[in-house]
Image 1 (cartoon, rainbow, N blue to C red):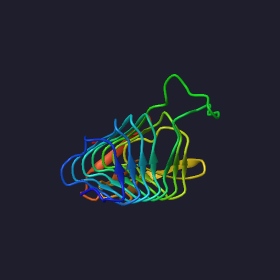
Image 2: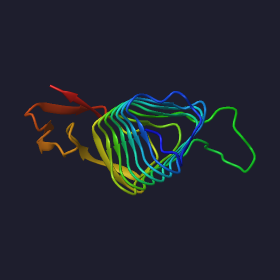
Image 3: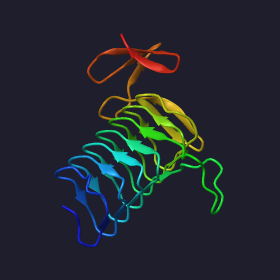
Length: 182
């Protein structure tokens, strides 16, 4: 479903995707199946959005951004794709940012360019992300700091000594800032 008050220039939109009013999607963008692209969203040409993605109102996806499957992007999340931005001065290439599958970005968070947001990561509302976020990390603040690890459903893992216990009872350990299942 594409709302008649949106401007969708691409034909590369998957089945069962909804695009709401006052949204602009440029010709080169690729949008997967079963997505919900809310009103007042702008998506540039060199953007790939996976399947089952929710993009809330007020989000702009600039060239160089890849969103994998099952990602939630909260309202007014801001992405940056140019490290040395100047009016009417364009880089040879924009920074590449990837948001891995099942990650959730909280409302009004800011994601600087060239970063990798790990799978199942949870970013708190209003956070400023200045470096890569590991898989399953819970981060928030300005600048964002890692404050724990999360389960697949987004709830916080329980810590017992050096181990983290997920909601299925499995044990995990942190090695080189990466969560590894035992």
